[in-house]
Image 1 (cartoon, rainbow, N blue to C red):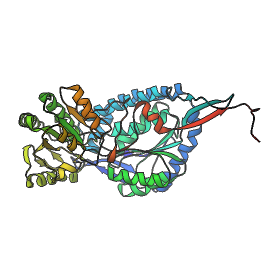
Image 2 (cartoon, one colour):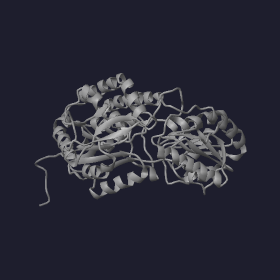
Image 3 (spheres, rainbow, N blue to C red):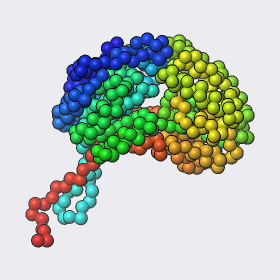
Image 4 (tube, helix red, strand yellow):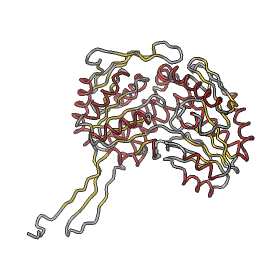
Length: 481
């Protein structure tokens, strides 16, 4: 499948005619061939977005809403195409692809609903006869950089609210899924989004640093949002800081699932299985540390290991729960984490085998802080179980990480749960539910090494607008001199 750039409403080859190939990680066959954008294409995309901003920012909320709602329906109708692309480009399973399209369409609908919620306020002024207002206005051209792991959800999230707020957008697609990301823009343009409001750049992996640097540095780009690794997020943040560009960053995670001594064990097992192994653990909110009170650990681990051992893994086109990891390197990293942990005393209680890019659901019990899997974001289906003595140690371990995106706590005592949740350093905490959950209207983001700013619902309006102080005054007012 050949993927072109989208610039000013037109499908275009890269200015230099270059392309790059994305290979199916499972079959190792060609998944897609995409245009490899140059710096000239960057300039053209920014120019197109800048030219479109004037009219789009003045377009009424009803018209913006109607286009976003129509795009959501079109996206739903393309679920088959999205699914094929996600399987071929990223090794995802069909259920994960279907969920991506469903939630992404709802993100478009939620953004559409927000067009009439971009509100200001009247602020009392000490100056007689003055009407003072705080007014939110579209910021300008927004750069959206989206990842491959939940490609339809996260790329749609990166562009929907900026567009709803009256901004124009450049989506820098992930090198791992150019076709999937490009199809999102197709849904929007088919819905009637004017030329230049969304532009899509695909680039060869080796060109990413200079493409991103040029996009952030361009004077017309006023906002940046990035979802991806903390390592790259720090580079984005530094570049944005150098150019005084506000950034919204949603980065890595090491989500703790804290299971206290009075937890519903079966409920905790269900949450752990889903949170740890959905999409092979390649989700920023994936359960990355299972922290369980020693008083119930033997019973919990036995049940969890039995469930994990039954999860089918293999060809993502088949009836499996775990499909392919994104690359062979990612799969080999899982073996390294297992070898490191078991050499230092961890007990392998489920899984442990790799076949190509497919890795079984794997659990390591008795994990300690000197093991790599304790600290590193695995971003795969190898999960540590850490046994603790009591609530205080559980909280300490939950916070013993550079990350702070999602978390969860299981206990039958809701007052206890609320107290623990308040002390866990994360942007998200679920009580008696999995670490893995998302809804279009919720404030989504992290703290510490997981980034800053919030996607979702009303919280995102502040990220993609400028708050201005505007007054209407008495022209005959008195001045002191």
